[in-house]
Amino acid sequence: MCREYGLKLANSFSYLKTESERKEFFDLEKIYKGEFDFKQMVNKFEVFTVFYQEFSNTFLKIIREKKEAEYIYMLQNPEIFDSLVTVFVKTLRKNHINLFLVTPTTREEIFKEVLKLIHEKLANKFKFSSKDNTGKDLRISEKDYYPISYFEEIINEFKIFKFTLNYEDIVKYCKENNFELHEKFNIDKKVNFSLHLTGFYENCKMLWRPKDHREIMDRFKGFNTGGLLYGEGGSGKSMTLAYLHAWAKESNWVVFAVNDARRFTHGGYEVEQHPSGLYIQPDLAKEFLIEFKIMNYDILKNAIIDYSEDNKITDKYTYGNIDFAGNDLNERDPNPILWDERHHVYTDSWKLHNMIPEDQINLRDHPDHKTILSEFLKEPRTVLDIVNYGIENERMSTNALGEVISYFKSSNNHKSIFLVDGYNEWFKPSMYDTYKYANYRHYENKIPPFDIAMCRMFMNFNGHMIKNGVKVVASTCHRFGNHEFTPEHINYPRNYSIKVDNLRLDDMRNALGYYMTNGIAVQIYSEQEIQNLYSFTQGNWKQMHLDMRNGIRLLPNYTHFLYRKIRDKEIKRAKNI
Image (cartoon, rainbow, N blue to C red):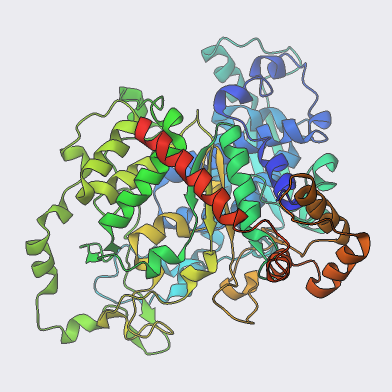
């Protein structure tokens, strides 16, 4: 089932390139010689995405080095992140600043200055910027963690960004890297530059892309980030994910596939509370690693881990920064204390009435919670070594999975795609009971998915935080009866979602034609029968299959036969691995 949505998304993602592939288009030597036409660049989506990725990676580098909560929280919002990148990529058409934006050192300084200005101007909104909340002198609610939701808020505050730029910085960079600078650039002067933000919003509403991409993916800005597929049950969301999975494998991408999000919250696995406040499921993590190894074996065995000294001071992956529950040791507290505005209590208020030293008992029962993978697996050569260790040692499987995800998110040489089906299942209570969430709204003494370690690794819509990759998720209506799900229900960012509609009549003709040609359909369908079926089902893919099966008009048990055939093939390959 190859729907147009999968084809369009695959086409958009195919323009993403690794660091080595981008050098063909992002040729600094040609730029400094004055042989590159920036005005033509904005009309070619292939070149546009190269500069977009370069600028995105500069922001990611700043986040990793800065480590201030304000910068991290602000740029974790894809709406803010992608809008900022779009502004600067489009500004490349201005001759008096494009050279400063392509030069890595000056570009980084410009981006840092912009983030600094935004933070200083909107500091009153960043209530969480207090150094410590252990004394609970600040009532930090959940909404304070994301004080800026849309780029319009920044535009309304600033209107104009002003910079003073110095050509000497470019001359210095060229001398250090042996680049020949064209004489028209080699001048000793300063440039006062004003960046007018209002024009960007009025003209393109932060959806600006080259014309060739706008014609394919109208009003979708997630080509570097990913998106959400939603729509009526049976319309083909899961099959679109399946197509993206097959396309990514064929294109040599690393695939992280969560085929059933409900399995993470209602799978009946044993859960343990980690000292960080998260709940881990080691056996589920082990199962996921086994499946992940089967899907990506050829890439994993060639994914080399770099231990060079210069790697420790860059934005590359560093082994050993992930704890037992999959948390990055360099990032914020995974389970912060918040103020519950509904109940007027703090989220850790249960501790006041907890007479049993539960944390101590947990550590006594599971002393390995304080350990990390690098204590046992000192210097793995490849990512496959980490995966194998996690499979062979179930207790460290969550830690191993966290290391693997961290590696591919930071990789300059591998493209990765995260696929999650049934995404909206992670926005309702899990099956696991605990009294600690009695004060949490709507969770009814159940552990919320955002505090389950396995869910947290895939839950955030943060495809823009992956150097060379995206995240695509799909909603489900299977267990929700006649309830409708839309992106607004989970405050999903705008212009990152695609509604998957039912089949059109021509699509249904093509599908049934394929069935008849390949012998899947038992009998031949006339044009009148096809039109009648379309009238009964309104083009719903799932309902069409149900109606056909009820009439015994498909090859008996063909679906089960095909599933077993594919499964047997995967098992055979796994044994060989």
